[in-house]
Image 1 (tube, rainbow, N blue to C red):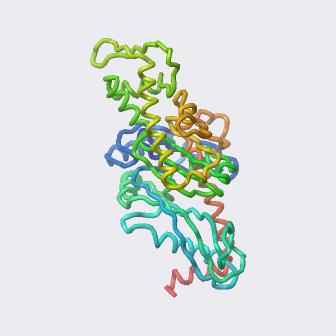
Image 2 (cartoon, rainbow, N blue to C red; image 1 turned 30 degrees about the vertical axis):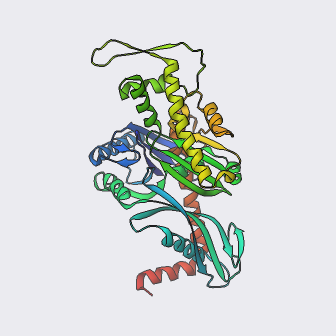
Image 3 (cartoon, helix red, strand yellow; image 1 turned 180 degrees about the vertical axis):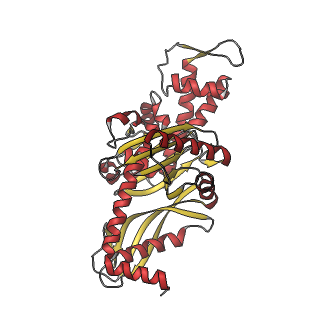
Length: 401
C-alpha cells in the first residue's frame, strides 16, 4: 500500500493505493483547495499543515486505514535541473551495481550547489572505455564507467518547509520526495513519445513545468512561475472584476480561441449585493488567448534558446488544469507551429476512479506507476549486488571499514 501527497498551488491532492505494483486499486482519493502555496512555494506553514491533515484524515476515513508513511510530489520555481557526468573505476573488470551507483553519486556530487538538495538523478546513458550509448551497463566488461545524467534539485529550505508541514505537525513519515513531473510523464506520455523525443508542458495554477524526454529519459526541465493564476489575474485586471469572479468565469466559460463573430454575453453575480455584471464572451476569450499565448511562446522560446528543438520531433503534450480550456490545443498548434496534443492520464485504474482521469490529476495518478517502477528498479538493483555485496556493505556501515 502506498500513499501519495501532491502539493499544488491551488490544491493539495492525496491518494491511497493498494497493490500499486500489479493491479492498482484506489482505496481513497482527496483533493482540497488551498491558499498557502504560491508558485509552488509554501507561504503559510500553519495553513498547509492543516490542509494536509484534512486530506490525510479524509483518506483514512474513506479507506479505514491508518496512514503513517507517504510519498510527497511537488513542483515550484525553486526546482532546478542540470546535466552532469560522473565516472567510476570498474573494480572487478565486470560492471556491478556498486560501480553504477558510484558513477551516479559522483555525477550528483559535482554539480548540485551547496544550498540545494538533490531530488532525483535520471541516467541518460552510460559510457564504458569510450563506448557511448549504453543503456544498461551491469555485467559488461571494462575499466572505466561514465554516467551521463540529468539532475533535478530544489532549495534546502523548500524541502525543510515541506518536511515541517508533513512530519513535525502531522506525525507522518516522508519516504521519498519527487518532482511531480516524473509522475505526469508516466501518466500522459507514451513510451514512443519518450523514446523519440517530446516536450511535456504542465500548466497548473502557479507554475508551468516544461520537461523534454528523449531516448526514454529526461534531457531538459524548467519550471516557470506563471500559469493558470496568471491568466486569472489578467482576466480580473482587464475586465475589472475580482480574482474569484475571474477564476469562476475562466473555468465555466473560458476559451483559448473563439469565433470572431461571437456576440455572447455573460452575466456574473455582483459582489456584496451589487448588481450583475455583463461581460462579452469574446472579450474574455481575447484576454485568455493573449495570456496563454504569452505562456506557450515563452516555453517555445526556452526550448529553442537551449538548443532542444531537435530533441522533440513528436512535438508538445499539454496537461495540467489549463489543458481543460476549450480551444487550447488549436492555440498551441498555432503558437508552436508543430504537433500539440492534450495529455490525459493513461494509467489503468479501476472503473470507479474514472473521474480522476483529468489533466489536473496527471501528476498524482502517474506517480502511482512511477513509484512502482522505482520500487522494482531498487529491488533489481539490490538483487544484482548479490548477497556477498550486501554483506560487505553492511559490514562497512557497521564497522566503518
